[in-house]
Image 1: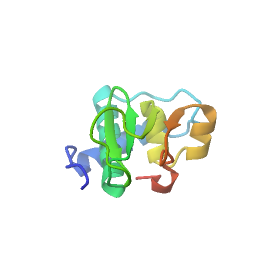
Image 2: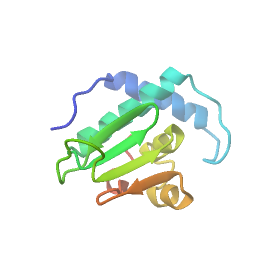
Image 3: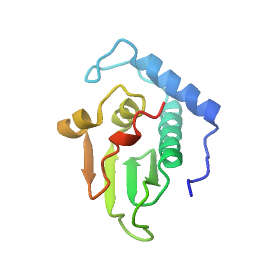
Length: 129
């Protein structure tokens, strides 16, 4: 069962839109206009919730410290400790993946994403918005 939504979808889409507007005209490696931390947190949490809704399950834990985490993808059920697969990255990388500005293989290849365990590849579920 997918996790319940905590972020209102309209607020989530608005936050993602603000993040995208700040990124407009910048390459992924380039410094871009910053967004407010609350906007960033809302965008990250909304897209993590979206991933959980589209790929329900508990076999992969996607971490975007310190802003959010979601368990997703069908497979072995995880109840305690570290799940069988963990994916971790910073907020900018996560939002670039979630919005299609960055490809999964490029993010993993550059070391921006740390992924371990079975089912740790999320490219089939991305982009989200």
